[in-house]
Length: 558
Image (cartoon, rainbow, N blue to C red; front, top):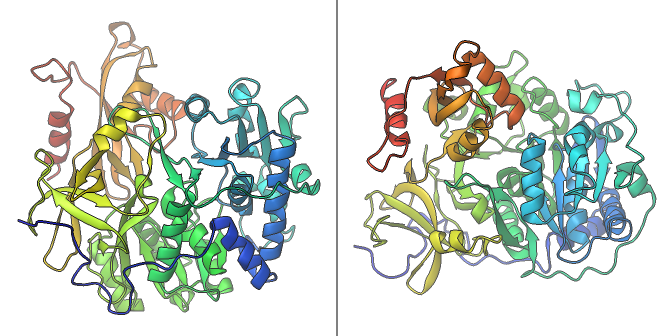
């Protein structure tokens, strides 16, 4: 049995220090250094338009000044960001930080009710949104939200762009409402208001990304400037990135994987970030060739999409040197094709919203397939018995627990969640990940199952209890149980087993429920399949036996 604190993996890269040398200050300070050292270097590229580091910092400061002067944002205030991947997202993120406020990143697929909960829970009174979300946010303005700044993505795209644009960029630009609380992004930037001197330091709260638990209510993870800077610097060093690199911003920036591995890793290295507002597999080859992309942070489904595209050609990978991602296992056949045809390893990693992205990464020189990797710098990862919390030997399955600089300070206003999620080992505070796995003799970690009830849809976490709570808003539903179902493309998809109310049986079809759900919740959460049943099995305590149904769903396809 392992005893005492864990040490670095036997597979630790020989040239990699265990303690990470951190730059001074915050992520904003990293942006400011890049703007000073290479002002004309492109920071972002968006459908043919580029924004230099000097221009990026100027806009960040102007928006930060507007937040303080026009919206009354003060130190520690929370500000929601609901934008698609775009230069505006990068500007908004760093502007909230520069204003000494706390970023609340929001999935732009959320509906009004979901946004109302996030606003109330976080206490955010200001939101920065894309114009396509104006109608979704309108019911909240004057109630939960006092100020909304509305951005049009088309403003950052050249009139004669050669690229096919997504609908969120091409939609007609309606005027921002003139009523109180609404503000135009372009007007806010044009005013050129300067913010007060930045007061926040490494240990101050910087961001509240939301995750969910088995209770069904999303909860916010409290991350400091230091934890966010740590995983950005860590990844830039691990992957060998510098200012000459061209990186992708295709993973959602509201999610820590895209936020840290793409956006913030770009900023700390002074590299260039190629952005795509909506995923388009047919556009990727042109972007890769035109800009010479060297680093692609991708979900496995993205890679499968691109390799299957009629527009894909081998030469678009000519400069690609790092291909990394996580959230779902890379199919073996695809990994073999990447290695045999392009000499590329898919370097998998592991992290959570609670850890601001990676706690584990595969060594660049010795990656293992379908493997979480080894614990990264200054990170102690162990496997414990989930019941006794006793540390387990190598190759024994248990719950993965982690300790390190990237671990959240705690859950926002959730003392019970903190009590349930942290344990002490060897005098250190460890986060219980809820993931079951094992560590091999070389220190590589492998995932086996999930202790918590969760569905992984193309890397997006879906919590059945949250979906069930939303489903019960439909009066046709008497009872329901949400399970995961196998999906060849997404890995898993959401399925609902529904007992209809007696009065609705003659007039309600499964397609009616599917259609209703897509309007009631984010599309990745909404069930893609609905099956009507006469009754649902129950446990001895009279609770719906979701585990029995879940096991049966996968057992039928084994």
